[in-house]
Length: 335
Image (tube, rainbow, N blue to C red; front, side):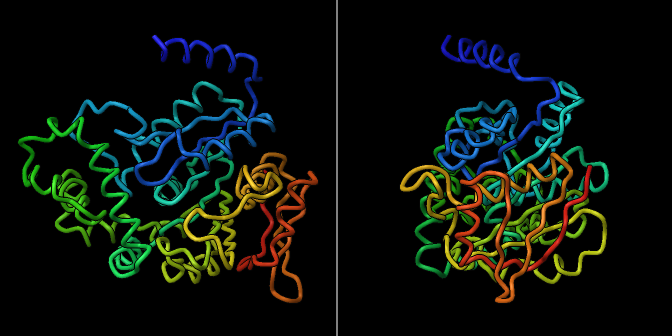
């Protein structure tokens, strides 16, 4: 009954938004969902600017039920494609955008690369994208913070999977005992993800699912924001050469901050609470793509970047870029 009331109120709210209002799809990280605080912070900021916001929950997350023996993965983009197609069908006159964090950023980038020129999005932002899952897996296994994160995420993934495990009984190579004993993300991927998606090994799954392979095929403006001290989406995994050497249509902007950890950037103008400061630059990027006026990240003489925007609070946040390095300076074309 509570969910029915929520859906009714949401439908009533959406009817107050113009049909051509921009739509923003938000994709959280591993084991996350529409309840994540960083997603909610970004959503509030976008809603204030007139965006229709849609939180994308991967299968089995955020209390969503599974009806088939398939969980989500870093390479499966079918659900994202279905959501984008549904939204485009409902609001054909609206520009569509998407933002993804961590695993959600990897899935989003893979989706954009697969879609190429057929992508229905007018722009996208990826934050803390792991890019090379084998390299990031090594960091999870060998680094202290990575190991702590991996154990915590494995626990969360087991909890998400538990209500649905009966659906997977009888699948070839599936062993429930391996799921129960999974103490790391790699263990869980060995027990569930690799098996259900048909990969011969976890390493093969990680290699095939890494968005470093697809970012060069992206054909829409994409802003990538990474932290150099990220213990999960490690800096060595970022495909800088691919991004810098990209000559195909669809501009990719890579911004790397000196600090920030894994989705750990400090609050911006809403400090000590509120959205992380890179959110302001991400919204500027979306607004530039939306208006078709161009978005430039200009290099100063010291090699660092400063953003320009229409709103004072966004200016203040981006000017904190004493720690921001722009690897690519581009202008987003009108779409």
